[in-house]
Amino acid sequence: MNNLLAYIPANLPHELFQALLTTPDLRIERILSRGHASPEGVWLDQEEHEWVLLLQGAARLCFENSAATVEMKAGSWIYIPAHQRHRVDWTDPSQVTIWLAVHYRDEA
Image (cartoon, rainbow, N blue to C red; front, side, top):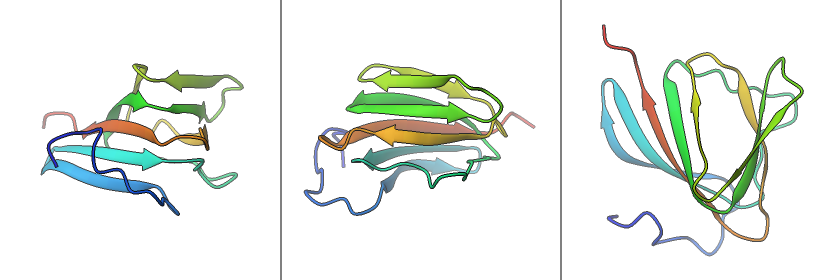
């Protein structure tokens, strides 16, 4: 794959995670969603920091211990520190949402 907006499956029964580059301290992936969300009450708690750019579509993120939600649309990005518990509350069911996620660890 050399185009983040190409090769989109017509059917996405589950979110699709595609590793683009992986090293011991860095992972870059493309994530495809269409109406997907984290299961109710399930929080993501990641070992790595994450920087996410929404390339296409729309999504809503929630963070534990916060009543506020983060609305994302094409061009929106967010930094999520390691162990910041969060979840995907909603992604647009009418189109594919394309995320570019960069996961990384602090230098040792």
